[in-house]
Length: 291
Length: 152
Image (cartoon, rainbow over all chains, first blue to last red; front, side, top):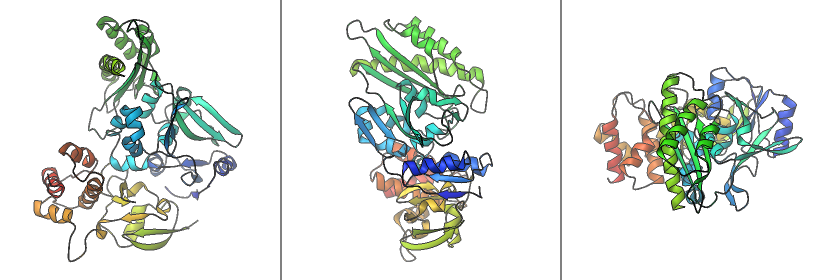
């Protein structure tokens, strides 16, 4: 980890200009938790780091009745964990953060970095995908908004160009009668990266109590966080029954493509997906009834 | 190219000229404050824990340039020669260490936790302290020491 310049722009346009000038040899730097590891291991050797922490407007969590929750790229995991606004609007995010890495990482690591690193073994992206989230991206040529699902391309690979900066993530407002549940399973210690994560968002039909909208996000079991679309289809439009739930859970376990590694074999992870989907869906339904 | 940074270490302003890749841990140890240790180097073990603006961070992975203008507390800044911090006293009373390599990290983390939640539950203590490792296995004594200071 040496031989780089440390640049500290104070505006977004200045930062994008620097990234453009270095044409791929400069990297956006925020919390630095993932980045310092990659640099120490020699996997990344940028000529410059562009520290974006001195730029105004990338912090804070706010709620807009139309756009929903807007989380700035520089918001740390610990800020999510302790946010009063999130406790009210989407408490599952605060709860899941208790198990993210350790308090030191949660104090430094940012939401923007979590998403822009393309790291597949994390929690938030899986939940955000099940919420149909979008990300806002800036570059010297302007801003664009992208469905979060489209940000992730492959292991550690995103749709961000080398001169683009992810500035915020937007989580649309939840409809009435909606419940969200996230279940994470760690196969070693709790401070380890998750082995499997399953996030479900379910909106019930007011009259029939059928599952009107179903989202199932799977984390850590594919090159990117993914949606189990076939499983969603199996459940959508009908009331929840054990057989359909088993069918959807089995489908989800086939829709992913986990790798065998120290956190579990491919077979084991598929089984865990099946179990977690079976557990998460009824919990989300229960929350939806109470919402 | 070296950068000039002002870091407030244990309340004293220090002006350092550092290359951007120098870590906060290296910078602080370079000042002779060697309580914090390099362990895993990947933010897992907690031996390099320092408090940055009151919050625990892995100093092995924080760039010193990133601490510019900020407050850093090291174990040396807790208590003084005549009077130790209550956590330091409790760690000694409970025998909460063997080799001592992890101790400064544990004490600083516990200090931050008690400032965030002065009356933590057992579960809160275990969850907050779960990111600090003691390879001598003094966990029961460490927890006992923290409980003692927390008044549990």
